[in-house]
Amino acid sequence: MAVLDNPTSPTRLEAQPLYVKARNIMVDRLISGQWRPGQMLPSEFAIAAELGVSQGTVRKALDDMTTEGLVVRKQGRGTFVAEAEDNSILFRFYRLTPDDHQNSSSGPTFPESKYLARSQGAATQQERDIFNLLADDRVWRFQRLRSNEDGPILWEQLVLPLRYFGDFTEQTQLPNNVYQFYSSNYGIIVAKVNEQLRAVSAPDDVAEMLHLPTGAPLLEIDRRAIALDDRVVEWRRSLCRSDTMHYRNELK
Image (cartoon, rainbow, N blue to C red; front, side):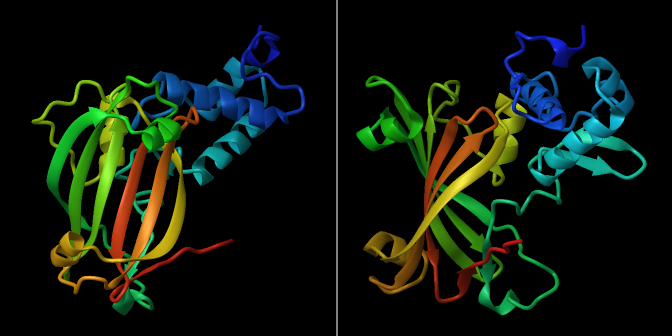
């Protein structure tokens, strides 16, 4: 029996087009770790034969997954599960651009990070609400300063639930590109982010780190990173310079 003919399949929804059902099955394989970041997928023909659908249906499902940044097609080589360091998706969730690069064809540059502090503690009520945690759950909190070639551009705090990252220690070193770290080490693929932006004034400590006067205008970005299975896996609050940087988004 083909997978899509299985009436007990959790991805079977009668109202969905066939290619959406095929996509959901393939996404389930990413969530379960059956297909890992960087892994080459079976051919469209092989997937179609396994699922009992046409090759065109599989191709349309993979087109959607490519648009979502979940897979990457490499000419002459095949289709691969996307890795967060792939150039095609590295800037998918990074929207800050220096003002003097606004009309540059070279595009944005990815900032370097310096970790300032880390701590572990009981989740606050706000953190429990964001991550859907229990009263006794704990979280890691990391603070870092991010810089480009012109100097510091933003301060941010990252909050991670222990239930997803429980084997962190006080010596755990987070890399600059944390989404690649999550996928490679924990099988957590960040599929989308929700962001809220507002204008704030720089507090004393952040102003000093960003080489600004206290009270200078900053852009605050509140971001929740959401995995393929719709879990919020990271919450970060970023305070960004607004005198030399801007937030850029292209809507199509």
